[in-house]
Image 1 (tube, rainbow, N blue to C red):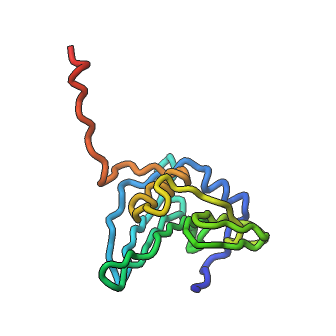
Image 2: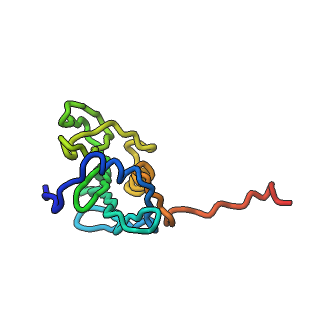
Length: 163
């Protein structure tokens, strides 16, 4: 595990960063590299357009054998090289405070346990969530608006309401 270059924020600072209304300009493309697929933002901006020091990084391992499914995706909210939130899946995860979560869960930044505090998390699509869907879900959960989404389609005009 790589050590962070910067000391983490306090719990209240991390919570404030998550609560702050934020945006990214567009849905980042999926990149494939060395056995994994990754979606990563370069910058997350506050409502006045200033960089927050945050980025969103989602990845999933690709299947190694034909016919096998890849790993379950995970996504992190990173502040200055420190993961202050992370959503992932494990059969059973025991957090430092003794909380046990089965399946999907969210790691929360804590002054005492750092990233080893957490709670249950239920993504809308459960275990069938794709990398892209989990990225969008996490952005919504962490108060990040995606201004232009590549997967967004124009709505058809409701012809019944035309005069």
